[in-house]
Image 1 (cartoon, rainbow, N blue to C red):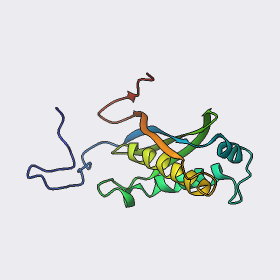
Image 2: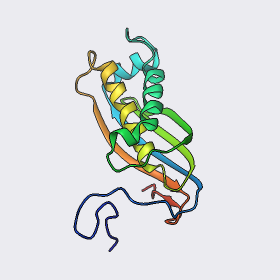
Image 3: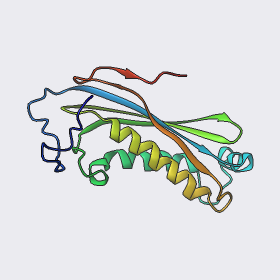
Image 4: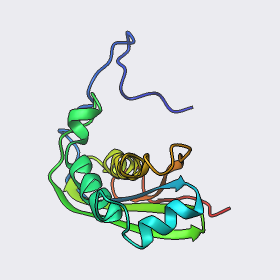
Length: 159
């Protein structure tokens, strides 16, 4: 069983020392799903909410969040991100799927940045639409893929 790298031998929290690792290209993709009333999704798609274009504001929030991940998650390394991209799809008449793809050339991966991006984007959708639909849910926040570094390539099984 793998050990938890954020704790030392005595159980104290620590930031993992990545100084001896080589810099490599690393990428991660994460996703989240926001479920809502179909009427709320129609308002989003038609850009009819008074607060503005929900998905563009959520995209900016996700990008900003990815860049601030080390400020939010105590043991994350600050990373010089080279790319953050968020996309939105509509897998059902009551859902928005958010996917983030994050890239870096560094000594550690960007999984947390991708996960933070989709989570904050989903929270932004909720915030902008809560007056129309307080019953929205944020679901299935998860890592879809990561590549680069010693642990190799991971792709979530689609099933």
